[in-house]
Length: 251
Image 1 (cartoon, rainbow, N blue to C red):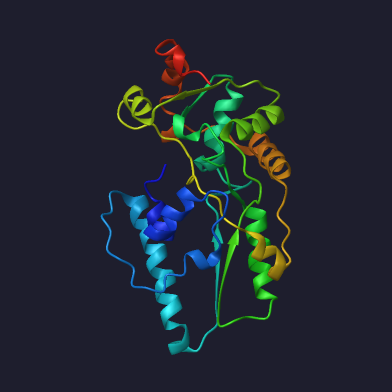
Image 2: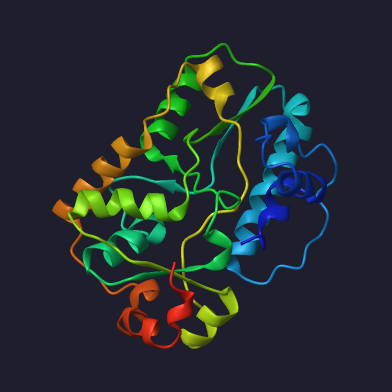
């Protein structure tokens, strides 16, 4: 779960986040003042994150040259909400509604691996707020929910909306990859907490309570999702049978 974290906040901030979980990271903890170091990029997602970092560095250092005011909105750490069928919400929703168990890597068991997401409606409000706010030469805003939940609590919210009870199991990530035949596709953001208070204080955007946006997104999924067969659901039948392979992994 730590693999892409250094691409987002830098090595020093990464270590601070993992050793001081009680102090959420603020916008100033990732300023990209220095030249962005070259990275070993293993896949398309690495390139996507790295290019975002390089772009923010470029904007920061060219703002004065071009005489424009720059505002950066950082959704944390994954954006979810209605009107999208990507796996960030649907990964969990489809598994909750099919009635089978959900397998999580052991690193997601406790609060040290918080579930901090960003509701798309709040991101839209932050953009609107920034457009109507007296612009600074360069401003950065973290946007996301202030609540920190474990993934079991998150799954419990989805299950309540679906009228289901979902069993949660844990196993080492390496074990899950082996059982999945190479790579266990799961949508988990990074296990650090971010401070989102600046967005509310300066832009006047009050975050939507997590239970409310979970309900709104679940309602949209129920009414509009028509069940394609995404890659991250292809091994679902096998997942349901994994509990017989190692019952000691149960949460």
